[in-house]
Length: 263
Ligand code: S3P
View (cartoon, helix red, strand yellow):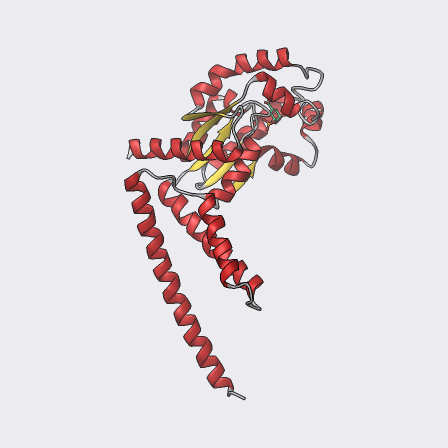
């Protein structure tokens, strides 16, 4: 049997190799970012990530440590995504738009693509209040809820690198828009009244639509809100008939183009 000192020395050698390899890998990531920027290529490519993982499975199919190594590998990929995302887009992303336009799904998908933290405003407010939104409205009134939203936007506006899925009413207050733009870009997601209706019709969690769940009401409220949404938006992405991946790729392309135009 080897001595304890020998085993420890071997572990040290392995750690040195790992540290060197990780440093080399980060330098490659830097080169990759520079190349993609110079060639106007999409920054984060989910297909490429899937390919890398399948290569890992092929290479390690007989390896007894497959699960542990995969876990570490995923965190290496995540950190490289985070570095790429930060270099390309150092701000927060505020997703705005009418109820049911896809803010939550897009936020969740973007957070995977960019390895950025997601904040679901409605969920935070529900958790803090200890009751559903419909109860906040009925007990304290809409104005109270809107104030909670505005306070949360102030908090979030002070941070960077977040993906925020905003409540549909957030852009209706000019102060909210100003605070979002402090550290972030505002992305408007749009969808037709019919698409919205199909997505929200069975959900009773939105007090604004309870008792008004029909296409004409949705179309009317959307028309009233549209000028505020459009005035707040730095970029707009239509969501009808697009997959969530297509929406996210278009969104990233548009905010990176905006960033490049302003630097
Ligand atoms: C509202 C939208 C909801 C929620 C609340 C009010 C609105 O959020 O904040 O029910 O006035 O548009 P979602 O847009 O996430 O559904």
